[in-house]
Amino acid sequence: GNSSVGQYTFDVPTDTLVASQSVPSSHLLVFTLSSLVEQTTPARHFILDDAVSVSAISFTDFDLDAAELGGTASWTAPSVLDKVIGYDVYLSDAASGTGRSQVASGLPVGNITEAIVANTALGGFKHLLVYTRSSLAEQTTPVVATLNDTEATVANVTFVDFDLDMIDLGGPLAWDPPKDTSKVLHYVVYLGRARGAADETHVHNAVTPAHQSIGANETYDGARSDNQSVQDKQTEAISDAVAEAENSSHNSSLVSSLVWDRLYIGAATVGTNTIDISPDTNLSVYTHFLVFTRSSLVEQSTPEAHLIDDHIASISVLFFVDKDLDFGELGGQVSWNPPYDASRVVAYRLYLSKGLAADDTRKQFGSDATVGINHTLLPPEVPIGSWTHLAIFTRSYLAEQTTPVGLVLSDTIASVSAAAFQDGDLDETDLGGELAWQSPNDTAQVTHYVVYFAKTCGASGNISMEFCEIEAVGNVTVSQSSID
Image (cartoon, rainbow, N blue to C red; front, side):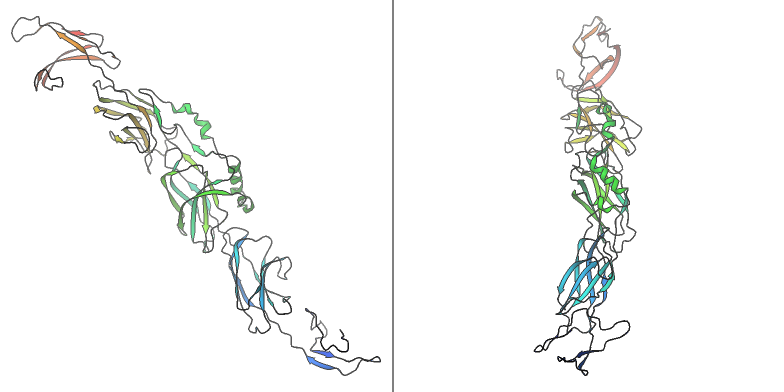
């Protein structure tokens, strides 16, 4: 270039090459020029080309989602910093710096790190670039590091529900760890529901509504609740999207398009690939288990989702008739139909209860009935007291149901009245004649009348007297109301 008389400076443009393929340049030359000719002997200045770049760039991705970055970039500062005023950091699709996106600009010389925030989209970027900057310009040729996207998502999530109540969960949740767990510290588990999902869940073999109460001596046929239609219910559009994502080799764009409402359940340290879901965990409106990995930086934003199968196993067709004919006492055979799927049931339990809610007072009678035995005996002379219901609970290896199937107790009372006897045998100490009585109002459970001679232990006339010695006289069928 040239400069007019009176000017004593010349700006050499940035990126001016000091060497070509054939002739390297070593000096800057300044000639004076007259109207006639340019001088032949110039002033000269030796060129000192400063090449000042960072070195040893490193970046480890601690964002565990596919196609997302997060972590800290670091580098070693140049050994000579007198002309450096800062650093510029970019992501780029090429080492040359084309198609770049700025991460930071004008970082102070004292900085040798820069955070790349979690969930930064990787897009088509393949390189991390760090440039030095002088007071004149940013250098043209950066120092480059190749980006390595860390992906650590669990696979094959499984859950077996051993809580046998509707809308309650309990049992082991398990998963396969990521192939690379070097950046994983924890697995974090949530109940989740994708926003926009229908208020449905996948229930398995639902046969009895919660707190099902049946009238006295009535039966309940769980099949009437339309097993198949309930069993086939699933979360519709959103669950289909989750299933599509799960079957598409972790299509992150599809999975991450779902926004989840979630409830924290628990966490497991890396190396542990299961978590126990406590019985009575309420499913509420949630439809999936979500398993996230977590690094030292951040929790994943795109989890592995598992559609929940709420296993329900309640008995049906509960039947009991009180065959203890005394007032205030119960006894008789209790029978039921087993659940549609009893594969997770290990026993049935019989209770007398003051209601069918989970916190109602109840008392177990007899031992557990094993699966395959669908009846048990309530022994005679069990006081009814303040009990109002008979309830059957199923039990898995994990827990007993909190919501039973039950029926309202009805105490059968069948006592004769107006008993009369006139002795027709006139010998002392001998009796003979007809003993007659009035039949009970309800004889449905009466098969015979049995007559005894008895001796009282207490004072006569006491309506609650006890008999110490009895001797059978005979019995007659219920169709008779007297005996000789």
